[in-house]
Image (tube, rainbow over all chains, first blue to last red; front, side, top):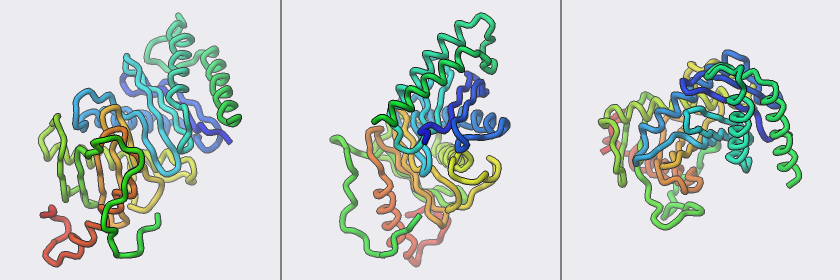
Length: 141
Length: 155
């Protein structure tokens, strides 16, 4: 029933700092999620090289047969991407909300080291709430 | 993926849905399964980052890896092989397009491993029918041409 399969956050250098799956469909074991994250980081960079015009900031949406992948890159190079069902709406807004939660609960946390895996309880709690709200809104429609 | 049975080509390409004025493609690439670039045409490309050889290789490499990524991330399949394993053309889930802020790339791979890539402006709709039409043209005029040797660039 979930429209979102999984959420990844990768740091400036391409390392995975946060991974969450929703339901068994998105599940991937740790090593694979790390590989996928680094691969995505490189693909994002290469896609900027192949642009026919200037000013390309990388892939925002990848559409496949069975899933869609929405990516948001912050000004600092941190990438947030979500794997969801094809045709899911409002994923860009959701990614912006996740970015806000990241800045509030992760970056402002004095014990959090930059570029390290995220282990912040408040971030997890608020993230779950945001996804739930989004899910309810999607189902209610 | 069901491939078109008939050999008739429709007289005009299907009109893509939801396009603004001036829906001109930027570039088109055609690769065979070994990475040889069979065709490259550009109509509107203000920026050239790399020389043509490197550009083709980079494009092929990017698509190869994206296909592998899509197969791995596919939520419906039972766990497929690892990321490095080359995928057969029909096997597994494949992506059909990606969009950046400056361009949209549409991709189609045939069962024989021929890859069709179209780079257009980001507002373009779903181009899968257009790519199928181009494939039909390829079959009629290239594959059926007795003087064409497979694996060489199309003249």
